[in-house]
Image 1 (cartoon, rainbow, N blue to C red):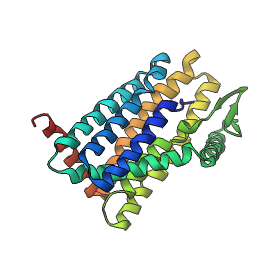
Image 2: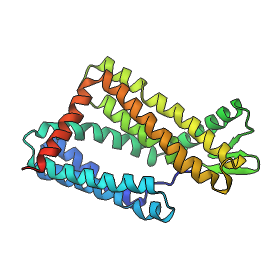
Image 3: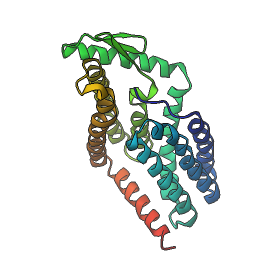
Image 4: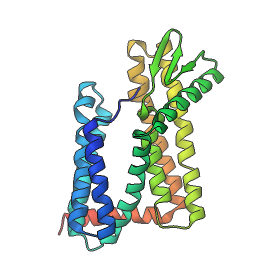
Length: 256
């Protein structure tokens, strides 16, 4: 299934997390700039792999992440509204922490196994003979092996951070969490079942896995995340306001 994030990404992202914590605590522009610049650099470590397998969607995402986070590091230094970046960094810390909790503990393996079981179960509901053994899903003599990225943990961690880490009424935060994270988890199960069935039955010819996983699933996932984000913004206007304020401050950086 999807590839693991590069080891270099993990190390640099961990270092940037330390700087983010220091930025929120000490409110130092320099520390904040270093934190976001390092976080931007971290994404570049994944580029060689995505380029080598012709995954231009994720290549674009990695380059865009580097550009945006580097831009943010410059904006932290120049902004007149440092609080906007501190609040953004605060929920980002939660998102990164959630991801690393699963990346570096047994919880990650447990999640992969459970996702494999549940994806196979969904596949059987649709009439496919899918069987999960550990983190592998077997069907028609073929199998796929799930890794952490196949659990949707990146999107789950992101929305956990933005919904629970924002300054807002706790009831609305929980509501926003419930309309995002469980939905992402369930949609990811459907995605995994679809990719497995496509690969096993060769629905799209010899490139069935690539088309199902790297094209169709990514397009549908992007649409789903946009719709989920819209729903979250309706529940948490504070988050929408913060994002617009962040974008506004970043735009102002160009003219300062």
